[in-house]
Image 1 (cartoon, helix red, strand yellow):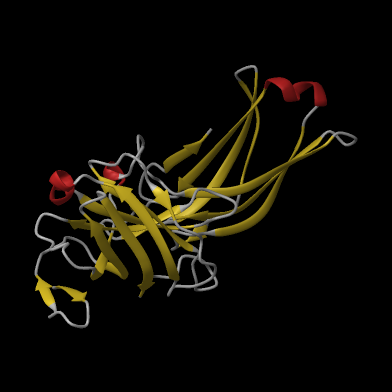
Image 2: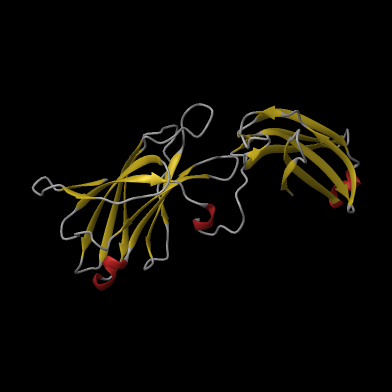
Amino acid sequence: MFIWLLNDNLKTKRISGSSEGPCLGIINFSLKYNPEMGLLTIYLIQARNLQPRDFSGTADPYCKVAVVPHVSKMVQSRVQRKTITPEFKESFVFEVPEPDIHRQTINIQLYDYDQFSRDECIGLAMLPLANVDLTEKVEVWKEIKALDVDTKVGATIPDFGDLMFSIAYLPSAERLTIVIMKARNVKHVSTSADGKKSSNTYVKVSLYFMSKRLKKKKTSTKHGTSSPVFNEALVFNVPQHFLKHLKLDIQVTHENKLGQNEVNTYP
């Protein structure tokens, strides 16, 4: 059940509807439409009940807002640091002619900012305007739902998770150091006869020179987690003149004692 809170002098209007998937939080925003100027103002207010996205139990959320299909642009809010109850308080204005306004859908995507890797999509809130009375300012609370990778803007490949690592080369010692720090949202695979899901993950690093593998090393295996922390340094002795033609191949591998290990590659 979605509850719409209108102006104090107006009655509350309830709109029921069904959405698939678990609720990942709720987002609060308001809409105000000027039909004479064809301007729709979306005021992003706050979000509540977001799930923690990092080890400290917080998140760094921000929103991407669009009005589809009429407006092609997507605007972005400021990042709210270390909170699962962000207060946005930002306005975004979209030009939408009056004949088209009720054919539009408000699309709000929530992301978790990550300084060192790709930002993670928390979820999506969508509001079709077909049956929305925009003669007055309207305030909305909307559930946030998981966003399938196939529906993400610009998505072309499956999302197997993220890997964080660093690379350093010391010329005087001809030493290449690769530090595998951590992974996030690693895809679970079935490793038991009864189909129970688990992740027993290690990272394998291979060095190739002119299409021939020179060396390989791997981390220890982290059991029972989709966000393993490694903090392990893999050190290779590499002549400096090899660097120009050196290729690094990183595989995040699920250890499977009952069959063949499953590999995700980060070339």
